Length: 282
Image 1 (cartoon, rainbow, N blue to C red):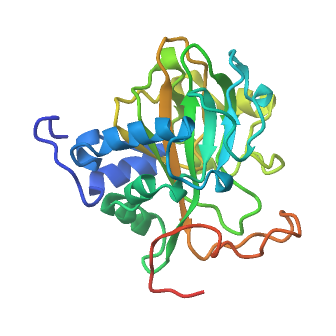
Image 2 (image 1 turned 180 degrees about the vertical axis):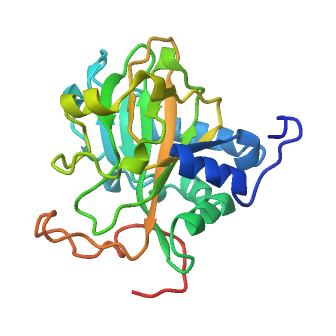
């Protein structure tokens, strides 16, 4: 790979990068390959503005969850519901970032479209299933157990998410850990609606030699297969660990009527932002 000084912004994934994604379950794109000058700084500033409620965004259409304020298990955090919950930088999750024009513009970069064309049929429209801010505030955060990202309510699984490090990540601040090649196992625990493994499944599948710390520099983007096993820990440092994860899905995806409540629309086409139009119509 080229040195940082020679690395340039890419409009497409290289064959070698995509081969790594397919083999390992993730691939890291460097900041200079993704961002134009100043673009990362715009997103870093914007997410703080959203948390402090000084951004012009539809807060009533965005999901917010506060961090509890002390390290612990993820189940002990606040409700993840619509609406702003106070002017603080202590949010754990913020969802529906596609409602912000700066983040939406970032989600539409050509390099992400190219990744989608490799992951899905060439003619498929591509929509955002989930655009979420993840935060482990300074000296806070929670343990997130081993799991896969999947949603039984969908009639087909989205293939990957683009995980952007707004801050550098390391084991000290609770970086993501992954199990190399685990996406090739398919769905491991279909009985859990959030994809979490049982203790026995963890003991049987997760081997120390296959666990990798997803150490990222500020501005790095990891394309992560949604079935890749991953987890994260707490932040023991004095600075936050912020990231944005965007899950791209086949734009013709529909809800499975067996796995969603009756008041939810049967088709997601009107509910999720279209980012890359296709030639196939539903």
